Length: 272
Image (cartoon, rainbow, N blue to C red; front, side, top):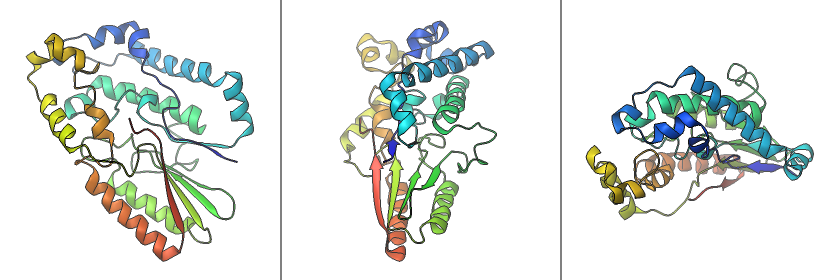
């Protein structure tokens, strides 16, 4: 047996209610929210919150017993970080707050989900241009590769082109005598398109700042001030921003399967 964890191992969303500064930050004025510093004391509080969440969730008897008896492979997703991590415009994505929250989540993700650190991750077998992907040989016939769809993600890409190259270079070396390759993408590699929804939410995203405080608009926005479903659609590989990247990767997987005579299965989790 092997247990594949496909992301959202923890729902960290409640930290925006439980950490006083973050609770106040959510209600800040738009420009102030995205220019304020990620303070050192806040960094400590966020890391502590992640640590305690992992411990509280994973020390439950049923989880603890499973982790102790079933080999596990994990790949994180947005709720291990914050809702929609990576799928926000540059003003938000590159802000001190979002980058600080991301660093804290990455540090604790590597510790608990991969038993390593930022400094040791590559030495311990994780790889990627900036992200942390894994490849595991599970018996004589099976290889599993887990793709980190959050670390390099932005509004234009899911994985950096150099990471895609590293993924397929690694597969060339591992897919030799096996019969089955499982590719783990936390967000589905194949899913339906919501073209009308994409267009509507793109327009709502670009509303003037003064409109964000209108009660009816504010109620339909996320804590980050954008339409609630905006990041959910942009997360998808089939969104217009990512579908060409998905199709290029799919062609490479098809070519690999044909040339190596190996069956490839895509495993995915959250479809929102």
